[in-house]
Image 1 (tube, rainbow, N blue to C red):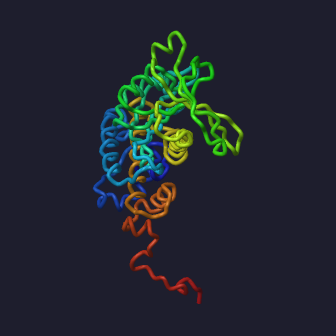
Image 2: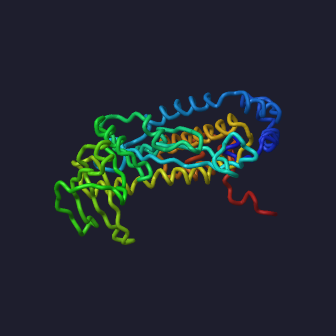
Image 3: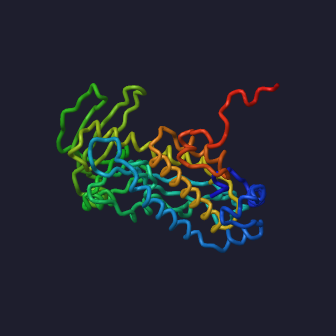
Length: 338
């Protein structure tokens, strides 16, 4: 975790960084580190330990967040997955393509606090839908998914469990229109229809009526066709829900840019999984600090403050508020040369 916060790049880099703070290790309850010892721990200590820690931290964070920004009260989730590239010659266990290795990070992002509530790490060849079928959502939840998750039997299962979904309709889908509703064209809406699938296989997998909504982005002119089983929310709200799905893309972008999950300090599967789970734990800690501080600081700003004051003995809230260091003179003339 120290390596995540301080941006260390290797086990030797970690050891050197900690050794430079040797006079503080006793007060931190730590001892001197060595590269062989860290390497052994990376290989032997199961990553499930840090996966369990992630669950504990998530529970703490959930008690500190407020709701999402929509007016409806239903829990809102966005699902997506991202591959983390690995060099196949260095990580031969992470077979993906002929010359490329990878692992896949599956995330279900809760829009209440933008917390990664459902997280799974799998082999890169695992299909996203196979993972998401195993997720358990509360009754009444709304799940925003990309059309890459298209699975008509899963749509039927979600509907039977009274879970709503919002996705994009595939262009080659075969269906018939059952009824039409009026739309507000000045808000970009083009249609709001109730449909039934007519394809030979599709009609058997999903023999229910669904809602087809057309929406044109007034800024870009691009047209979208959404599919949902929610008939209560307005058509514009359905379009806004899918637009909000972009938050899960921003989550992946943030952790890849600000945490260490693109270069690894170990090459075994256990070492890679350990580093990713610790990075996710750091994300939750930063989110918790943001929730608790109630300050208008971004998580990136909090991360930078911690990086610069990682080994300093300082009150955390005072650091986040920018309070002056106790006992340090604030006389503006103290640096004036005589």
